[in-house]
Image 1 (cartoon, rainbow, N blue to C red):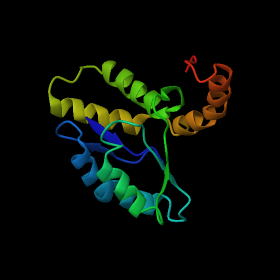
Image 2 (cartoon, one colour; image 1 turned 90 degrees about the vertical axis):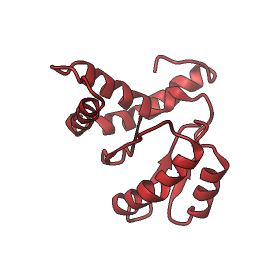
Image 3 (cartoon, helix red, strand yellow; image 1 turned 30 degrees about the horizontal axis):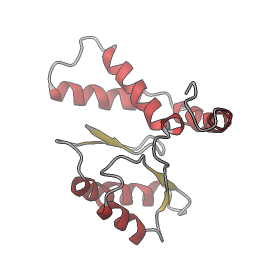
Image 4 (spheres, rainbow, N blue to C red; image 1 turned 30 degrees about the vertical axis):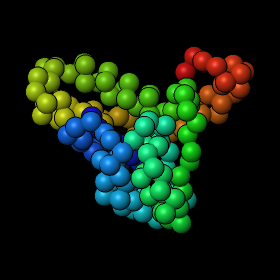
Length: 150
């Protein structure tokens, strides 16, 4: 499993095991806080996550509240995958790794392929996804909050 920061395509963080609330709590101060302070030194960056159980844990929620003065957190409604550009990024990474020749055979090969594919994403890719959000909102509203083509 990997965790990523999609602001200027920050680094991938390798997780050796399943993500739990406690493990997620170690990621926030060790990685998120330092990355956001560097990439968004003006304080205008917003942190967005989905509603996965570790993300919504009491400990993670408390940590985000305690750091709200230097880290703006955008609450993500449950079951809103059509609006989550992380899904698009994940799909692009999976597609890139699946098309590698030779394919990754070991966990280390897979990690290397993921890192390489992450770095090879086109520079404008994230911007294109961000620009698609207004169209996604319109589609979601037209669908009355139901599924869209995204």
